[in-house]
Image (cartoon, rainbow, N blue to C red; front, top):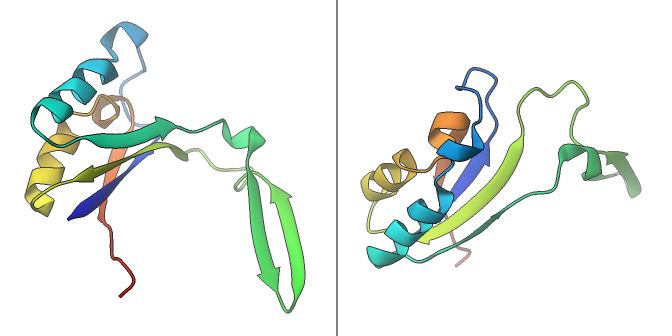
Length: 110
């Protein structure tokens, strides 16, 4: 089963400290467990666009909502045997401390 980790900022999280960001260690641990990951960080929300099509009218606006205090900052896509395993792996992700990790099972089109 595939799981998508949506890496989100969180205003209530502990302050980010680069010296405590062990993302390379986390990635190596995941690979060592036979759960290779594909993922990356995302460019800042100031560079984002939101696209809507309503009644054949295209509406493109800058970023998500300007008042957003939290946003998606990155993602990881992993193969896991269960939601419980995915949650255990997400709990060790550095952004579980500095933000939050939303774990979603991929639901393929059939």
